Length: 143
Image 1: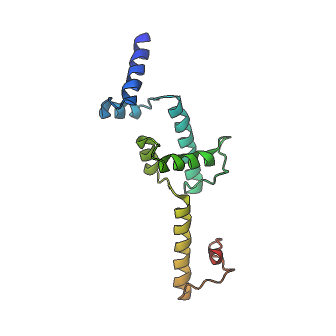
Image 2: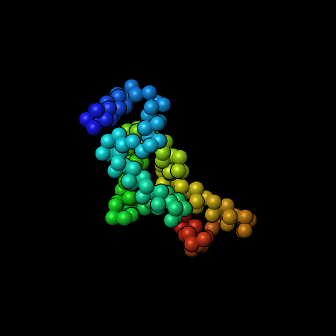
Image 3: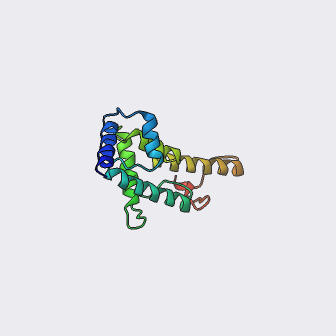
């Protein structure tokens, strides 16, 4: 109805001005309220990220990765960039962090390699890794 359309438009406007009470924002979001078309697209990409995480047990999506004909790797890169500029909406930051999103993919890779180094050190009583050494299919010696 026309009344409902006006009410929805008003909720979106109030939220855009940050004057909609948080409890109302929460209730609307709980039922999947779409704040704008960009939200719908973002939610679609977020769902693809969740699917990627389910399949791969991590969310460090390679930049060139395509999921269901969508450029998921680019989307992930853009979320990191927006967050780095403090321009990613806090509710999106929260949703990403809630599922364990890694803001700096290089940090995750470094931590993984450091863990492999610790494993090597435990086995060998030193951390002078030969350059050609591979640990769990990773080129630890090159790291």
